[in-house]
Structure formats: C-alpha cells, structure tokens
Length: 351
Ligand SMILES: Cc1cc2nc3c(=O)[nH]c(=O)nc-3n(C[C@H](O)[C@H](O)[C@H](O)COP(=O)(O)OP(=O)(O)OC[C@H]3O[C@@H](n4cnc5c(N)ncnc54)[C@H](O)[C@@H]3O)c2cc1C
Image 1: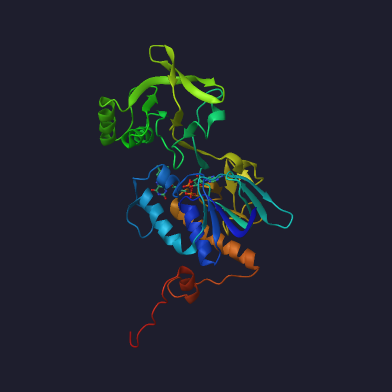
Image 2: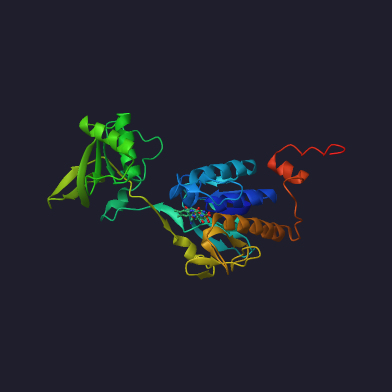
C-alpha cells in the first residue's frame, strides 16, 4: 500500500535527525529511513565512544551521546521510523510528487525528500562464497541473528575477528542454549577489548566456544540445506566445518548504492545543491550533510545542521507556496505548541 506524506528523510545520521527537528518546527512530520538498525550514522557506527568537541554549546560529547541528545530533541515531532531499511528507488511522478520504494516493501509518495545519506548506506560486508547467497535470511545471517531467534540445540558458527564477532560468540555461549558455538576467523587473533577477550578465553577453557583459525573456501549442501562450510586452515588443509547456522560479522561499510541511479546531478559522488535551500537538480529533493557539495562545503556536523535548517525553510515555503516568517523557539507560542512545551512566562513588571 502506498503511504502519502509531506516529507521523507533518507538517513538517520546527525544531519538527518536534525532535519526531522527543523521540519517539525515548520509543522511538517517526516518519515525517517535508515539502512542501519539504529540512529546516529557515522557518529555511532564509526566513533560511538570517541569525543566530539565542535558541537556548539556542547563542549564535549561522544558520538553516541550526540545521537542520543538528537533523538531526545526530535521526540516531540514523532517521525515515522523505518530502520533496517534501504531506500532502493526514488523517482519523480507526473504530478510533481516523489515515489520511494524501500527494501522492506514500503512505497512512500511524498511532496519532498531530504537526502541526508552521508557517505552512503551502512550495509554489512557480505561473504564472497559461491552459492551462499541462497541461504541468507534462513541459515546465513549478517551481523546478528534475527530478533527472537531460538538458538536451542543449534550448531552455530560465528565468523569474524573484531569486537562485534567476539561479542556475538560470547553472548551466544553465555546464553547456553546452542549445542555448539564456533568462532571462525582466519587467525587465532582477535581485536577486542581485554575484558571481552578474557571472557572468550574462559569460555574456550570451559569448552563452551571452539575457535577455528581458517578461511571459508566453499559450502556443502544437502537438498535444500546448508550442512557445512569448507574451510582452509593455516597448514593448507581443507576440511568440512558442520553447522546449522552461520552468523557472519564482517563489519559494516558505506555504499552509495542506488542514490547514483536517481537521476540527480552529481559531482564526484556528491549531490550538487544550491546554498540557499540545499535543493538538488530535481524539484522537491533536497540534500544535506556529507552527501552534498557546493562551493565552500565542509563535511562537519555543524555545517549539516545549518543546511538542514535552510532546507526545512525552503521546503516549507515550497509546500505552502508562500514565504515563511522566522520565529524564535524562545518566544513563539506556535513553536512552543509544536514542541509541546509550556509557554514562556511574561517578564514581570520592572524586570
Ligand atoms: C572518525 C570520525 C570522526 C569525526 N569527527 C567529527 C567531529 O569531531 N566533528 C564533526 O563535525 N564531524 C566529525 N566527523 C564527520 C561527521 O561524522 C559527519 O560529517 C557526519 O556524520 C555527517 O552526518 P550525515 O547525517 O550527513 O551522514 P552520516 O552520519 O553518514 O549518516 C548517513 C546515514 O544515512 C544512511 N543511508 C545512506 N543511504 C541510505 C539509503 N539509500 N537508504 C537508507 N539509509 C541510507 C546511512 O546508513 C547512515 O546511517 C567525523 C567523522 C569520522 C569518520
């Protein structure tokens, strides 16, 4: 079924989140879509625990803290969330509206689109093993097992060498439901915090996790089932590693993907915009944050916030067909109503 709306924001990084806030101040509720299962974009995915020092008014906060503050700030505007969802196509319609399709099968017909896609959609790195793709979603999962997955009695292989892979294997072993947990990496060396590595060692000592130092070279299939991985160890020997389920935790990488096919003018993988309202070459489509380019562009969160503000004014005027007057959040009763806050009290006499 097609859902009709005034605004869709593609990307829930810091700039996409602030775009939702600025649209909210214009009285526009947005759909917010991200390929990741959580908000925050690069701030959470690439430097969640590192400090940022150049957000105005916040002397220091981590990437994760910034995302959390932005989520708090946009809460009054109740966006329609679409996480774990990739926007696969975007096309202008004869009536001037824009039709989006998502990987979750949703169709959104909207009057404006704000592309806040950063360096592209963060999607899991996939295995390059012949024939494995037909098992993705059933016996092969990327990054994590599906919500509600019952590991009872399963022989599970977790593949990867970094912290998320070790954490996944340790969590599964500590749950104690799976019949066997195997952590597969090309070397018996893992990049993870010391405390997690100690937990891994304890579980290995207790025989609750086995570690296989080998590379996947192929798969064994019986009927419709994936039964084993063919692995090559450091000694050059190939053998079968039986399994019921494979969780490949190989990291996340940004992919510009479909955006390049949407017929929007680009310059070196960036969307070309004007600096007045951050409009792209396609009417109704705005681009803000790291994805855009214009003279003087700097890829900073602060600059993205400015762009989102002017894009919201531009879109509000286009939707209304009239000028939008500037109002302050400090004093405007309309903005207080939209924000759901109590009106500011009038200054007392003589104050
Ligand atoms: C290590 C590091 C440190 C940094 N430190 C600072 C700093 O101190 N100060 C500063 O100002 N900046 C810093 N930056 C830069 C800052 O993180 C970026 O400018 C900012 O994240 C850009 O925000 P954004 O919302 O435009 O894009 P992003 O944060 O990249 O978010 C884009 C989101 O869009 C989603 N997406 C893309 N395409 C699609 C699609 N087709 N469908 C669905 N979802 C999609 C992605 O999954 C992603 O979550 C740093 C960057 C790095 C890598």
